[in-house]
Length: 429
Image 1 (cartoon, one colour):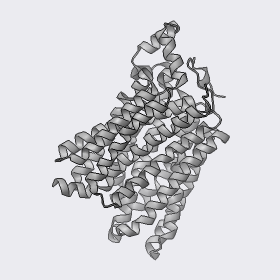
Image 2: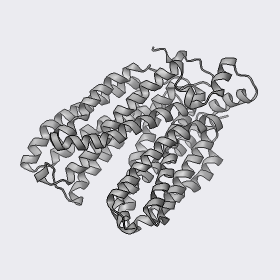
Image 3: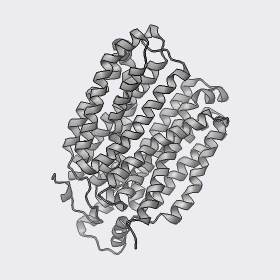
Image 4: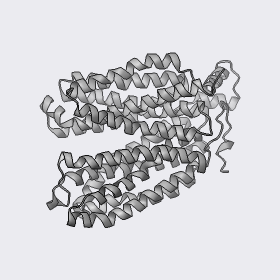
């Protein structure tokens, strides 16, 4: 069986497309929020709440959906997740009120929340350890490609209903997914031993426990707590920065903002998305050569230097009206968030086979829920007293914290994942 060429390539395409379309699902609602509010005759704030509901759904998906990948198989559960977010997003095209929109947005969030951990678990188990980080970075970069696709739909003549309706296509792609993407041989070996009663008593006891409880027991519990903290700090920094950044571009000079028109904001949006795309892939690629922790902390330090430069550039930009330097420095800051290109593969490498989908799903989504929901309101409140400059450079301090926190995790990058693991691989090397 040729497991080194055909299987990994088809798996890579499936996981990458799943991540790409999940980004389209998330970004479309953000871009079309004004048009949707007008069409449904509701206040724009109601659509913003629907965006938050999707974030709650994503957290629920990570907690409830990811364990299905450990129990029923990576490919099968990945297909379920893609179908759920595709059908729910397409269904939003028929929304006749804010209630149906929120319900469908929640269901779509459940699908996207489960897709992240299941997809990366599958990729970890089938791809060569020597280049696994690069492929993880490539998949992470698909979020930026999906953002560009969403922007294209936003500027097309389709309108918001047809743009959402197009999202039914990924569900059709699941038919291809199930036909051409074999199940992970690592998971199959483990599942075969489970069904044939060939597991050790300790492993039987572990498997019989609910996966959500298992990730909070013993050594794995300490690991889970550290990774949740890491994701919480990452998402706090990202969501606080991104929301205040958009507000800074749009707010008038009298309140400390730039007061840019929609067209004038475009260079900022393109530069940040392009720098994000390149940085997540580059971070994953470099993590194969220099290790996951070293690469992660290096990107954190680069991002911190970008925020330090931002502290000095923002003042002069407001005085002179020049925006070129701001675009460059904001891009430097965004490169720091390339750490997402490391986390997709690092976290599944930390967990054993029977928790390789559940563990990352719990950590990523709990961390996103804590940091992602706390960041924007806290940052928004601080802007009132501290101003945009101080709040926008604050993630630089968080990058320094992240550069230290990553070293509390063991270096397991590039290891061979096996069906049966005793946890000794978590011993730092």
